Image 1 (cartoon, helix red, strand yellow):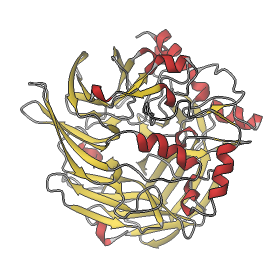
Image 2 (cartoon, rainbow, N blue to C red):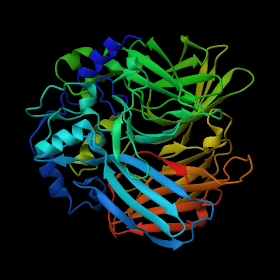
Image 3 (cartoon, rainbow, N blue to C red):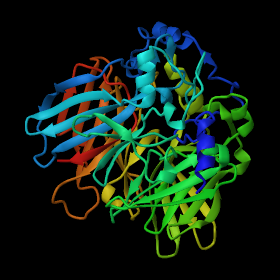
Image 4 (spheres, helix red, strand yellow):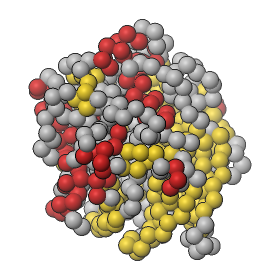
Length: 510
């Protein structure tokens, strides 16, 4: 492990970031140029015409605890805390970020108790958030925005926005980003702690936003250092002991998620390749990538006991953010599913357009099912058409054979971004169980919570998630019987405040 190389790469434009949408060569260079109010002005002009902009307005202050109005009845065994994370401060001073992924992170807490559901939201007091809000202006360049007059970033974590996900493991709760350290916080009070350092050698190194926790309680995760083409692997036991490894990856791509099986780690690398020359020339991290479809979608397979012996396979070129799950059969074939788009145009152009209050459509999505034969080295892929994202599974089946995916989906043609349904997809048959919130509701990620005392059968439990009612300007929190989505929520909380649309979360049982 060469910590010096990691630190150098992170200091150069947050080059360790792995969250993120990355541009293709046909897009305008330096699209994230100096921001001095143009994005904010454009967004403000669109707000009255485009109701969906409510989800991207952002906040400037914490949200005090507030009980939600409850319709229906919470299941008796559903007690605990749903924590969600996402970008929430999009503007400061005259600068509105040019990309959705740039905003400072806020933890949304939904507490389930005998009296109902209580919500509060609190910004993570990262080094960046504290410094910039004290100054009243943006101080640093970000993932997709070049800030006029920005100061040099003193450390990689000076730009850490902690805005992507949450994990609770080994007694600690962490807010996750892609380009730097995880951030500790108190799941009850939402007070921000310090940065999580796994070992002294790993201080400031990337720890990504989609760790996987298997049946044995071990957490696996990774971090990408794009400038030096390094992939770092973390294994954290249920008690918090850490094992690490690092390997060199040629033509380093954007990697946001991965999958684990009982024996392997699997990374899908889309052909969005980090270009050092662009980074050195001053491009934002997002604009320091090029689309190289001739590389295809590379699959990197690592045996958990032989992390220094990579196996490579190739799939058709495409783009992804999220995997669902992976498992391996007795013949050495790894079965994996993920959400696929043909390219990154929607992410690069679309997520920038959102910050201006513009929507020009989205690329087609599909649920891709992949077979990776570790014995022959062959790979194949089949597609099921679903305009969906945020795939989740019953967490008891991480790394094991699963048959269902839960996801946010859109089934109606719309003049706005986002999703209108929550869906359970039976992978083998293609059958769906679906609840549609409606054309004027933007649906976020829903998480599966196993029912207490449930059998070992997959899918016995609750599906819980948030949505934004645009007409009533209300935030919704719904609880479904995961086996009967079409019947609608068993219980639904609502409140008269619009929480900014976010990314990922987790549930901590009481």
